[in-house]
Length: 282
Image (cartoon, rainbow, N blue to C red; front, top):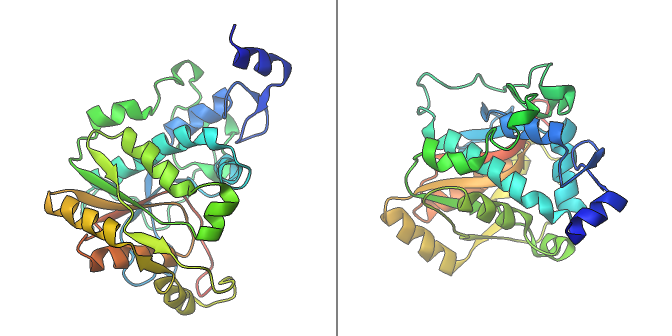
């Protein structure tokens, strides 16, 4: 028996999704639901100008919300593997979905169904499928299968960067970590960082949609080395996907996509783990 097993026996870890005792970052039912969730097309309302098509694994609620908060704010870095695998599946779905206007898209503003696996993810998962089959937890949606099922060619993942203050507080950039975990699960993917986040200038919660979009456009600056690498990868035929953990108004994703497109990396898609909807005009 390994030391970690002894520690688990004496002090079992809590599941990041439901806070029940678990051997690992997620309990069996939460892990099953996590890996069975189906990425969907999502649109903020109102949708900011220049917003690329965005795909999300789940709604920002229930166990998804809890797991992301544990990862970002409570320092549970062990969740990076599960979250990175999930993000890789969203990337594959985004790149393999027909272009705008063709069949195969989920309806705008998709929402999770009322029933899903074991009831653990509540509204936190869209179309959870057969996640209740605990015997398949090791295989359901494992991104080791993404390379076989999702031959999407060369992919460049561009994480939305955190501010320097957030990086210090969280002991690293949480999205860079997730993007790298996702890239490891894809057959021909890399992570490029052409953007850096400028210090925040205040709370945007009270801003209108237009004001928030304007603020987001001024939230980034370019990293010359990252720009050069992005251009080289795109010239070699790589597709570009901007990745983030959550999309709310879409202002940040739209701004990041605009910056990336401006330096020569047209953004066909964006992939996030969770989506939340705000009221029109907020």
